[in-house]
Image 1: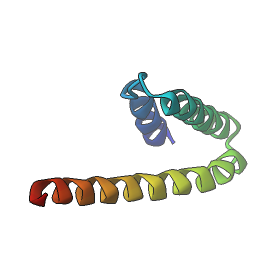
Image 2: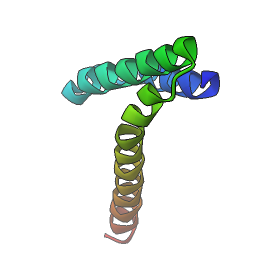
Image 3: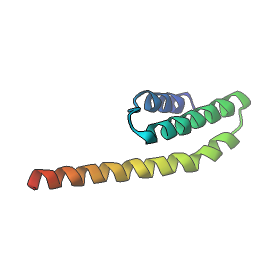
Length: 79
């Protein structure tokens, strides 16, 4: 749980605040962090189970963004 919290703390710290979506991501990362703390303190898996779908969606989104970045870079290099 602590390792996961560390990851979300790091993600929060590197957000580029000039983009509007950063505030929303910060809130989402903070929520996930709070739920992880709650799970740890209560020794209860329910909060973790509640954030798993969010984390899965984030992972899918990050993967799609990375793929688009690579596609755009390849297009720019050949363009």
